[in-house]
Image (tube, rainbow, N blue to C red):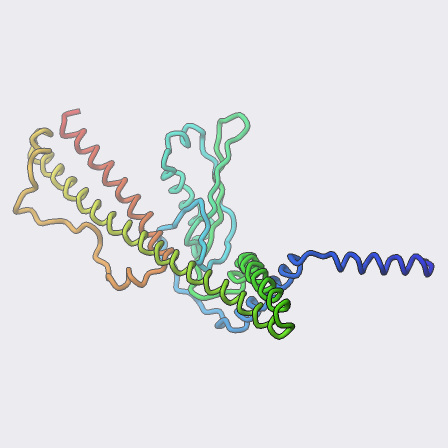
Length: 305
């Protein structure tokens, strides 16, 4: 049991610690409170769960070593596979590994998986095998509490910046004109910083969207050229035209052109979410690689090998 002197010393020590706490702690606490408030608000305003449409068994699974910032998704679980080191070494673009991950994800989560994210690989100690791990996720078409909680850390970080701006404004206002001015200046400082970050975020988002759509357009053009070349080589093979003559010939004028890609609604593409565009880009890149392989094989066959 503490005597009076010891108790008074403990109180003084406690006061000293409280007095010396850094402002950053206050900012973090405020950030946490705001994050939890946003979480609760989103949870209370979210629509009740609805049954999502069944996903097709032949759907394309997006695979990435990154996350899905800005997209709402539900974690399904881990996806893991082990491949021989030799197979991993020749798979320079990781396309075969991604194909295996898609297959594994569809086996484990056939009704839900839309993507495998945060993919990482690790070689074993003796260098004979490579283990590849990722996280299977299901994309959500509505906000969820899990999505809000996942972003809580980011919200807290942003709130810490806003809080710092508010505290700086409040300090300046307090020195100039007292408590009322301190409050006004603090709010103004936080609001100005918040508006700047919102504008910057929207500008970055617009730039990313533009880059994604340009990549999609470039792929459409490349696929169209590859389809024409494959068609010409197939005709040369059928007519037994030498490769040198085939490469210098133009496509048959009477031949009906093949569509570069399946016809899609342009408005649907414009309104598509960034994730859908990235998934389409990845799927088309696989198709481009497939066409390139077919063209190489046709040239090989026509040349008489």
